[in-house]
Image 1 (tube, rainbow, N blue to C red):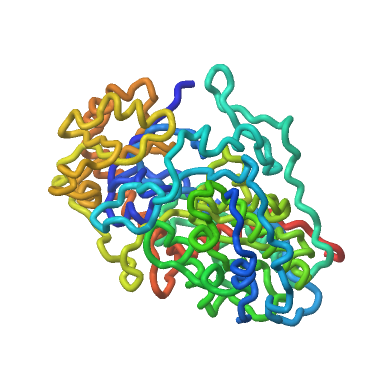
Image 2 (cartoon, helix red, strand yellow):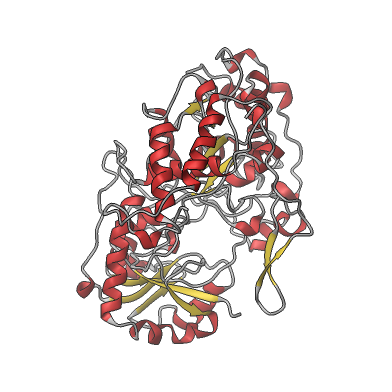
Length: 534
């Protein structure tokens, strides 16, 4: 089977910004037929600095690449596990526990080398290209993330890799199957999960819902019933431990805005959040992967070990202080991380890595951390204005989009160099760049290119107009052969799904906040294991 490139029509640009589940660089204003969504250092850091974040007052390598012109709308669902606890523990401050002796990073082994260049959020508003991290030299994938091949981390699920014929096959020999364990004791929340699971399993087929685009879902009836049960039943407990800025300090603009907006809306929510952890189905770990990098990464160290140690000590602390983590070994806990290094910060804690529901922008199965069917793919959204998150939504009508295809981004992976070889700055209709030249941005910046393009070239693997890698030289011919009527249909489909990827200061039904939360809820309910007495 040849490697495939997916081609997707561009959609109203700012919407594309919000739709992007990976780096905005992979996106241009894309119009697409949307098919699948949900249903279904050697660093030596001052320990006192780390301790201050944990002792506060109470209250995200190499990627498989294919070419796609696509609206990247990713699956919003997956399983999880159990919850709650016996008696409510006192919510005392983490300041009662001295962590400094437990945090002492040593020279970093290869598994702690920085996995990939993390983009900085401080770049020109006129451009949405993928920027390089200011402190890290850009390396080849094999150099920047050697542990991905030499020291793979088992997720507990079979790995998927291409065979000699290019077919992607599942390897079940090197890993153990994921087997959720029953909670140590049962709670009323468990009974509600059992009820929800039965209700969802026995859901009858429903007629078309004008608020939902049925082809987007694996099973729109199951999604609708699960969403209704979430609205009625779901209770979330938020740990109050930890000090700002790593905890409880959402960043609401830039390329990591997804984790910040979710944190803000979750912590201020009055419908789902409860003060009594015994009522909770889910436990939210309110730390920011972006703030971890910003506050704990030692520039020039090329090591994320301090971040991993910090997260491990945080989990050790809450599991020692409260009974809730130990009841399910973290299976009813979840965190949200949009920074590329977010997944790697779980490396030192097995239960966190294997059991906890991880909502990640870096949801790459090949890296052995994201677990399909349990973890949640988090859309990466780029926001310039926290006060006006819907600013700049919309683009030009199809008839006014003068660029056939557009791409601008760093040349990592296998397919992007091939794309650049054939189309890089060679055709006025095919605007393909490694990075937008200054002579181009003086006249039209990245966003304006998005607003003026019919198709987005997304060399990451997506869907829609699928182009084999061998046909990259004929990409323009293939795109021009698509009838205008089909293009208009694809573009209109993007508009129908757009609402699922928009942030609102006050969340609305089916928006991105609720869709992310539903994915976590669905994961929790689907993987729930009956405990004692149930």
